[in-house]
Image (cartoon, rainbow, N blue to C red; front, top):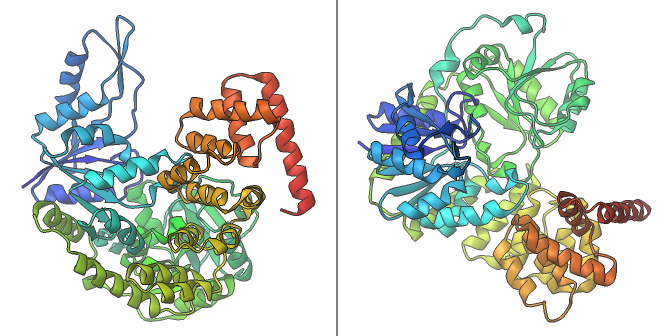
Length: 561
């Protein structure tokens, strides 16, 4: 039995149930003591006479449900003297000591200061479920995550691509995908009142509707299938006016997790219409397993983690989606995958994690190579379904030492902007500098600034490229080599500091260049400069920068950029 502290990325009760909560409950069912620290403070600073008394009281009053001991994170306490004290790390340490914690499973690198202080005394495991940098406005999280991966005794990942990346940084890495509690979705449920009027067949989706949800694709599919109703359940994080404009698309918004199976049970087919970008190729979708448990076939865009999964059909465009939806609806064979679902249950995943964090066995390099070869075989089995697989195959071939074959695989593919970051990273790793501008320009949002850096020379563009694929250390190193050759590299260094939230350092460089030359080179530089100028309430400067940005927008329009 282990005493496990879960430093979670989601709230145990207030957020949609995801991997952290599911695994915490199942690890507790395996007779571990599980303590779950919620990530978001629910209260403002609290008035108290003594910090230590307050902490002692809080530590002794956790909430317990589903066998899991739960705490609300406390960052700061305001004392009667008026002094505000940051007590987060002390609070975590008090919990660790009270519950004799010997294992920590962490989901976010923001806890790195505390983890470094106990490294070597407590075993730290990073459960990496996504490419975190895609969720943050700045790139500081990249450096924090690298530290976390480095100090962790082991790293758990949920997808093939995450395994490829994280196992390079920490060889003690294991792939343990997401899962399902099958029994929750296998029950018979009455049709919820709010969908009684929606006629069948129902093509259903559950999950967040965010920037990775392909709205254009689903609109096109819905317009091609007016005889079907498209039911979307989940929190909306982006503008959905184009979805609301289609009469057979129904947006229900968020539903509590325990209510979701009732809706899913009345779908006729499940869909996962995600954009094929770097964030999504790292994703192992829980909803696929939940659709399967509900007896549904799934139609999805060609996500690597869904290749070869039973009753899952991959489609790269609206026409293919329509064809696969119709095949699924016409398939009279009942979906019955009880044995498969039991193998892919949260209980089985918790057992795998329990073994991993308890065992002293280390993953071997030879084992990694075999795993990468298995990934490659999987991708090869689906040749032609999506250009992005050519990018992922090229990456695997490079990892396996077949550089020339990797180059042929990428350079001869029809891939456009899918997995843009991966493409650019490979170009840099392969030292194919002559290809850099071409592959950078696949991101149309950057074309204006790419031209500015290209005009200064290849090394300037490399520094810019490194930063845009979140390789911050490499970007700084490349920029530092150019400081003697051109003053304009200071703009890119300012952008780097801005990305790392070092706004004073960024502002100093922006102001120096702007006062000396009355201009910056890039639109990004202007926009970053404007943000820090606004925060400093420099009204005249703000007005000037706004005008320069407006001029660039006009220039881009004229150039059709």
